Image 1: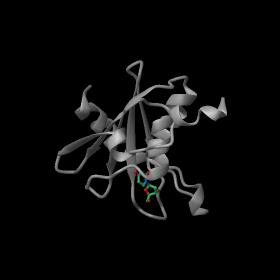
Image 2: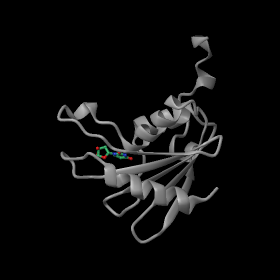
Image 3: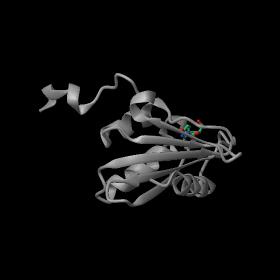
Image 4: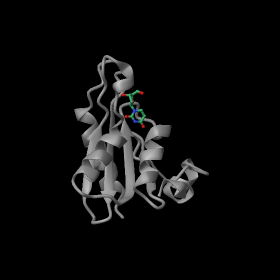
Length: 133
Ligand code: THU
């Protein structure tokens, strides 16, 4: 897996962010099971709760294209600091991955890599919701 390539794509995607309320631009790049990369940015709304994070934008693009397996998610933001996925995005990543790699970059070129299990321990997953079937 090429972490640098994913970080580069996430960084490029953040330039499309629609963030007039927070001025905090975020870009994400998702690597799917078939080796494709989907990118996304945060898209805010005057009704703040309707805002969509960069990670979910990228994931929803992938899933709507038939790509339902996520291997890695890279995130870059305009803060220049490591930006961690929010709780809702962690839950959405869990829906489409076994244990995805979460790759964070900063403006100094440093990269941090986590597993989803590390940032979403004891998550509520399909495995522990068998009564839905
Ligand atoms: N945001 C993301 O897109 N991804 C993250 O990982 C953290 C937060 C967005 C949501 C909102 O548009 C802005 O950043 C400020 O919270």
